[in-house]
Amino acid sequence: MLKNGLTQRAFYALGFLACSGLLAYAYYLQFARHLEPCPLCIFQRLFYLGAGLVFLAAAIHNPAKAGRVIYGLLCAMFSLGGAGVAARQVWLQHLPPDQVPECGPGLNYMLDSFPLNKTLKMVLEGSGECAKVDWRFLGFSIAEWSLLIFILLAVFSFFLMREEKCLTS
Image 1: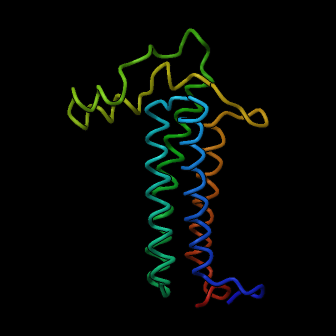
Image 2 (image 1 turned 30 degrees about the vertical axis):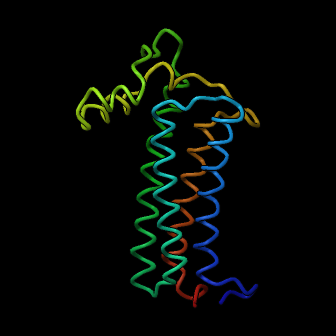
Image 3 (image 1 turned 90 degrees about the horizontal axis):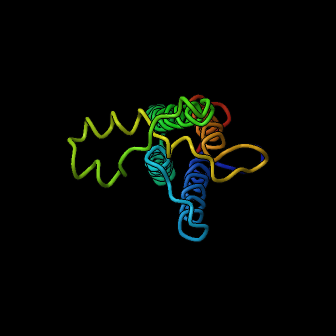
């Protein structure tokens, strides 16, 4: 137990709550503020969902040393995957307007019309809609905030995996 009384389980629960809160805010922006997510945004949501579910499983399981490493690596994998997608979107958003790719078909159409591997390739290449910035907070776009948060989640995952002296059940 940490000096302030927080346990390893509480830290995993905190990771789950962070991911859940981010997903809830994404759905708020989509349904209450009518900001439609681009395909890269949807993939980032899936990475938040994956990391959140791993954090939840770890909070329920309350793993020992080997389990901490496994859960930490899984959370880091989802976080770094999401960071990669967010970085791609940030790159698209910072392209000069004449170099932004043309808008492509919607994700639902791509999933219905193309094999999964081609759909993934097209989504990760990005399109004009992924370069559009509809929302900013403190001067940063959603993709920029998402990149920062994914990096922080990865660091948090490594912290939970490595902290043997401070985190005990």
